[in-house]
Image (cartoon, rainbow, N blue to C red; front, side, top):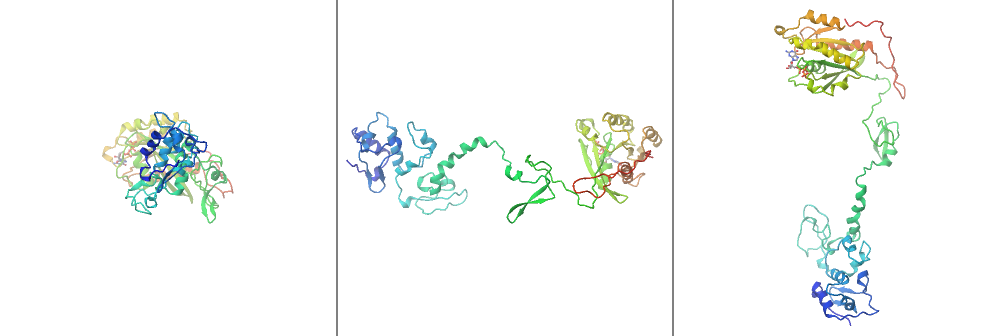
Length: 427
Ligand SMILES: Nc1nc2c(ncn2[C@@H]2O[C@H](COP(=O)(O)OP(=O)(O)OP(=O)(O)O)[C@@H](O)[C@H]2O)c(=O)[nH]1
């Protein structure tokens, strides 16, 4: 017997009412197989409910409501689409994880109630109808009501909500765009933007192979006809407070620093000079004088050194007496004996405070086959100019280790050695 229910009681309490009052009865014609989610029943929002034999199965359960009736109640009542994950947890349910079949039993909502919100984090949401009150922010974005979701989200929403479960195991993998990197030619270049997409611009490129997937800093290839410049690396050592930082700053920046602090580790300064028409770069490594700031850092800078500058403070005899220990440190780092070394006495502008006489310093320099320079980083007019000292060293380095290049070939650098002088004199 068809059962007609007014739409106003199409709610949870009404569903319970059917279960309690209807006798157990099931007909072969009954197609309302609720545990499977199949059936021909329908709930019409305007005209009531027409349920032939539906009550028979629903009344079979004992004290607790059967699963079928739970699902039935849920879909008769306009409520948010449940997550398919939750739905799949219903025991006995054989619904696919998407659970789309349930939606056919959902009571349609009156057109006036359908309010569609677009995803809008800030500002006023856009509504097609205004039957529902304004609810800011995410109200309609995540489908709190089935009628408020756009069709595409109703279709793909459950899948999208669960997609991250499947992608989660792969989230820890870094994906370095393998196809793009594999297409990079190995000889170097960079990706530019062309009309038809990315294009390869040769010239600047990476040093790693195509399989590494790591881009390095661009290696600039010198154009033909220019000199390739390799810097001379000069390490400056001596006691703390003797003026190493001021000396290197004076040479590279051309002035005395406004204020100085104790060097930590190594400071690096560079200047390009031109000697005999050739451009040469001089790198000055200003090392820390304090022992606690030298630990484990300065040691690495003794490698590939081209020259050493020993500095002492002319107003501090202790700094002069420390020179043998600095020479010993160079020996410990296996500096070659033919590496140029110079001795610099600084702060000669403080004439009244000078403690290290020139003849004593000269004797020491002669003993260790070093030229002696007395200068002042503060007052460049005193004695030897700082500039002149380092330029002299650069001249010696250039004549000692020439790095002038011939016309560079297509894919390599050829050094053009100059004849080595038979004897080196640093006086
Ligand atoms: N009067 C005078 N003072 C100088 C001269 N050179 C450096 N000083 C001063 O000496 C102090 C130490 O100078 P720095 O260049 O920092 O000494 P440093 O050898 O680099 O010291 P560390 O970084 O600790 O190794 C500073 O107060 C400078 O102003 C100079 O030629 N004349």
